[in-house]
Every structure is written in structure tokens, then in C-alpha cells.
Image (cartoon, rainbow, N blue to C red; front, top):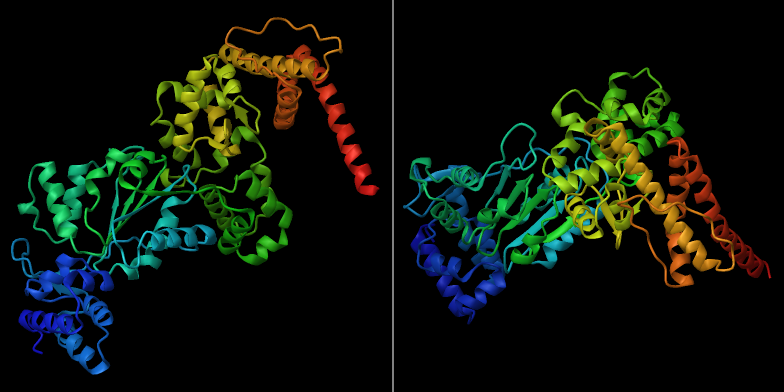
Length: 547
């Protein structure tokens, strides 16, 4: 074999026919497309990858000697040109005949720790979708709130998965949430990608549909990993998706990309904050394990005050590393004050500023969702329902549900149970800052009053269902805009009290701090009956255990 197109074509066709296989059957065995095998047998692919020939040799079950002859000539010819170069057989779009295989992935984040479950999940999703022998395009989306480490995880995993994609890896930051630069739209993105695929810039079509068609053509029969970072929405990337089997698209976004799943079969992985163990490992890597072990309580407090958010932990650890003689307890103390916590987590530039990172997400919200988010900063937590959200804003249940759904899609709140929403403490601090900056004291006080009255009147109603013979407490009519939960059974009332117990305690404290002392006392009274029921049930359960 001489290593030219005729030799490869002739031998491949002879081996396939000897094995009694059609082109379709060989394609299924090798994981290549029928078109790729047809091009090889017709001599159109002049210098195929050795990896491609290895896959064909495996599928054809060639013996060692025959296999070496089949693959060796192409490998020797490519070695003369350099291991990272390959010949572009399509004369219609090559310039000088040779190009580098694109390896555009950014370097992995230094000190990447944890995320074992998420890395395993991505690999499993790729495998289940046919990533190691793809039958179709695979689209994986990593979504999550600002600063949670989506890009770091994606890059780390992409380097691990790169070996499955010998035709190269493309990377493009689409700047969907950049603070000062416009997003990279489809036409600009396609020009970057086409040039990365060695298509001459002067020959790129001017029209977007033609650019997209050319991009899909160049990726046909390729096995490439394409990472699209910081995507705003589905429309932002639809023109950048290959159409042929064999490639994988890895996307990161602060928004849920439900449309991409519905229309293109994408699989989404929602990234949460770090586990306490992974957060401690991150601090140990950045500060040294001895320093972390020396102050375990301060370390635990730092992790909690930073809400286990990777960006916050990275900024705080950078401050601590710059002050190696400072005890960690001094940094923990700085984080205790809610009013300046986000100031402490300002690393001095946009990429290392937790407040700025949150602001990029907030700018994408509609007016109703933005108002809901700001006023949620007045809610004492730990979670709220749609009716509580409607009360704090003073809107209908339908509008509150729409706003909370938008916030959940933007990962500014999490719907961890149906109809129950929460956000971590740093997001709550940021929301409270926004409420303070954009609303008057009177408006904030009115929102707090509506919130307190929502829980007070709902709690009183649940108490009446549980204790119908008890003299009801006399309450003033709720303020306009207050939504009151209603209960049709003892079971519903008990379920509500159980779900809202921690919230009711926090709201009582908020009422006292806000000068709503009468409402605070009334709320405590409405809770006393259900508390007695809970105590009796707990005592009965303990008696049964002892018996």
C-alpha cells in the first residue's frame, strides 16, 4: 500500500467485501457514517485520520499484519507533516492544504475540586446518548446561578472527554450575560467557528443561512466537541448546532434552556452550589490544608456565609491567601454582617465580584420578575410560596407565579418543591440591596406589612380549622394586595403549619424588628395551638419508642 487515496479506497473496499459487509453495516460497526465510508472508498478522503482507520480495522477484525499495512502508510505520511496537521481533501475550501486540528478549549481551572457526581453524570449522559459511538448529535447543557462554576465544570469535563472527538474541539464565549459587551450573535459566532475550521475568511458567505449551511457541511462526518459558553437562550445557539451525527455540543447558561430540550433533544444538568465537603476541599487547596485544619470552626462559618458558592469561596480564599498571617476567624467575622457581606466578596474586578455577577443575571429579567426579586430580599426565608410572593409584591397569584417561574428559569430562585421557592443567602443579600436602592422606605414598609399579614391571616385560618371551639383572635382586615391561604381540612392545615413552621418564626422576628409588635404577638398566638399538637404527637411517638 502506497498511502495514497487509491490505495486506501481499494483496500477498504476489498476488506469490506471479504467480510461480507455492506457500507451501512460497516458504518454501524465502526461508528462512522455511511457517507464517510463512501468517501473513503471513492478516494475522496485523501488522508484519513489514523484513528478513523483504527476504528475501521476493529470493525473489519483485521489481523495484526494486515492492520499494520492498512494503517501504517497513512500514519507515516501524516507524521512527516506533524502530528497535529491533516490534509484537507476538499479542494473547494482549503487554502494552503494543511491546517491545525482545532484544540480551542481553555486551560482547566487551576485547583478544580469536587463535582465528582456531576462529572460522572455528564459522562453517563454522553454515553447514553451515544457519545463514544454516536448515532446522532449530542447536546449537553449545564445551567445554574451566577458564580456556581458552570464554565469551570464544563471545561474540566471537556478536557476529559476530548479523546472521544479526534477531529478537534471548538470553543466560543457567546457573552450572553456580559456586563459591558454585547452578546456574540449568530453571524459573528459563525464567522469565528468557520475560521476555526480553516475556511478562508474572504470566502465566507455574507448571508446568515448560507453561513449556517456551510458550517453544517464542514462538520458533516466530523467528530468534534463544540463548547458554547455563556449562552443567553435557545435562539442564541440554534444556528450553531451541527446537523450530522458524531459531534457533541456542550453549553453553559444561567438560564434554563427548556426550548433547546424540547426542539433539539438537549439534556440539561442543573448545577447547585458545592457540598460542604467540596467547599472545604476548595479552601484547603487554595489556603493549605494546615491553615484550614487549624481553624475548623472559622472554616465552617466561612463556607456557610459564602453560601457554598464557588465564586464567593474563590474571592474569599484569594483575600485570605494575600494575608497569610491573618486568622481565618477574622475573615469569618467580616462575613457576619449582612449589610457589607457583598463588599467583602468584591475581588476588585468584574470577574471576581459576587455582586457584579448577580447583576448580570438581574439585567435580563422582565419588569415584573425584577420587582419580585428585589422584594424577595425583604422576605426572611428560608422559603416562600406563590401566595407569599403575591402578597409581598401586592399582585395576583397568576402574576406572582409568572414572575417566580421567570426567576427560577434564570436560577435566581430554586423551586425545590412544587410551589415552594428559595434562594441562597448571598442572593437574598443582593436582592435586599436592590430593594433598598430602588424603592422608598414607605414602599418597603408596605411590602413587609403585606408579607406579615399574609402569614398572620393564613396562620389564623389554619388554627381555626384545627381548633374550631377555640375563641378566634380578632384581626383587622388584611391590607389590599394580601393573598390569604385557605384550608378545607385538618390535614391541609397541619400540612401548611408543618411546611411553614420555620418561616413563621422568621416572620415573627421580622414583624418585631419592623415595629409591627401587635402582629408579632398575634402571629405567636395563632401558632400556639398547632405547636401544642406537634408537641403532643412528638411525646406520643417517643412513648411508643420507649415502650
